[in-house]
Image (cartoon, rainbow, N blue to C red; front, side, top):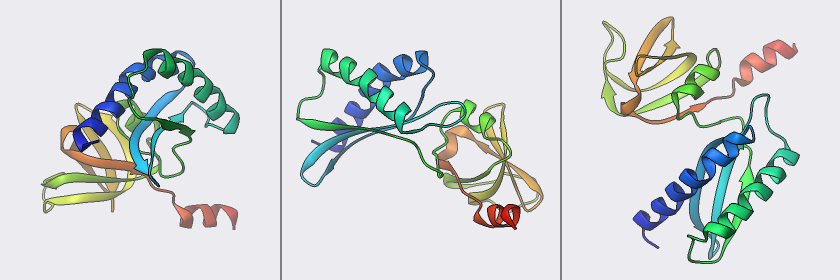
Length: 170
């Protein structure tokens, strides 16, 4: 399968499954359609308010299996995997940036942009997520709040702060 076909399978799965998962309280964070070890894998990353456990992943898997079987849009044989997004959870939607405000995050742009007055353009930021406002992600780095237009973001994810965790445990 080509990259275009891979993307269309992932996008079709997202369109089909996202509303059903949302109805049951799950957030479809990411969909991957890829070839691993000679086999095709449809991997769904799901989350929910308060976090997700193995029982939730199993319940979400049962929910989507039936829908995928009925719709039957995927040609080759494949394995379905449903997983937690992990501690480095991707951030995609405005709701993600609002929900995780106050947490450490990393944001990468497609190219350098001027994100704060008086500072040189840059391509990536790691700091405290402030939220989402007027089409831009806000992140505080070194005491300055940077605004990155959402349409310029190539990738964003939470970043676990090991040092802060160690300080809390000390």
